[in-house]
Image (cartoon, helix red, strand yellow):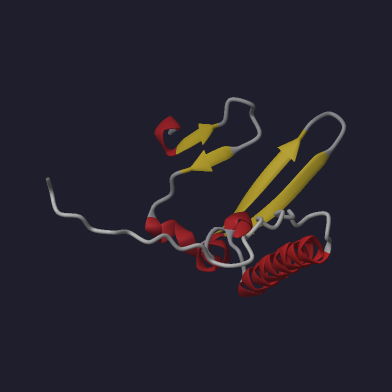
Length: 117
């Protein structure tokens, strides 16, 4: 019946609502047009155990993704460190503050306390 399946608006995806007892079967998808005829078999038990077929992501995929992120992080950290090192080594990058004129000897003033008139 139509409440157990749904075709996407662009006609490329067919969604099926199957009872849990139907997961042990193999389903056949037949597509044909005047130019060609294709048949594909789907083992639902294998798809459901793997977590959804095309949407599942294996452990090796997570390992590869982790290694890529680690390499990008290390590369970015190295680049930042190198840029900071170059700025510190470049005399034009560090602002120069002119030395303030300091008197040769400290100056003192003598304060005399007087009583009020």
